[in-house]
Image (cartoon, rainbow, N blue to C red; front, side, top):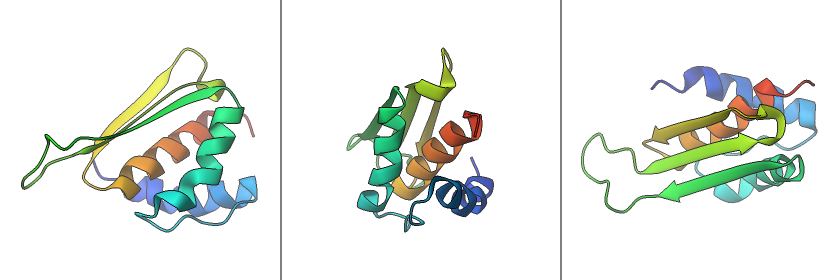
Length: 98
């Protein structure tokens, strides 16, 4: 999956929510957004899979359900933690009625 559109949308999402723009691959920068998702009733899972390695591996998984997604969920397996978290945040807040 190409995450360019998600990365391009992240500044708008952060601005709309009044949070700082997260730096890629800095998990702590995503924390305020993840916490807001939790406060809205979402379940957020970040998996770091040590069994997936080697060229082309996608060891970072995010799954988000509930909250603004209702009965739906979003999931991705990504090469970087920044891609996985960006996908989760943009996909979630893109579904929310803001």
